[in-house]
Image (tube, rainbow over all chains, first blue to last red):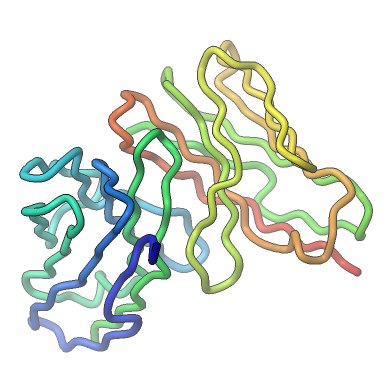
Length: 110
Length: 111
């Protein structure tokens, strides 16, 4: 099993550009989440999903969209990148409470 | 929003000593979890304790939960240099696997 995979690992965007961060899991977990982690901080929940076709907002959803068309994939879209979105983004999946995290995407918006 | 807060923010100890870090949260929870994050890496799940449990052990880890005080503690016994990392607590209040993380305790174990 690959677990939770994220692409890309690094990305630099200009203000106003859009992009999609990819996340996939092969553990057949129903729950998936996106977090951002700013320097020296804990993780903040952006969006989460309790199953295919079902998504909901977390603590900091503004500027981000998600969709969950399959159990395996949970992409995060930045609609119009802003410098405040410079962060490390983590995707996680879970089944019975224990979360498995991907390696993260380090995003810089200039 | 529900959020755990860890204390202390930073802890420096010698190898072989015990390390204790605490987590406080605001509202009722279904479970509380502890995670470890090595520098620049993703988080690794350490232990989950449910709201009806008071103590749990896993190897050198011991977690306690006091729901009346809305607090939890993580004890790492006989610490090793490899335990150097940041440790986070995360709470799940409604059992929808929607987690809120604290800002973490940065543990440095000196060889």
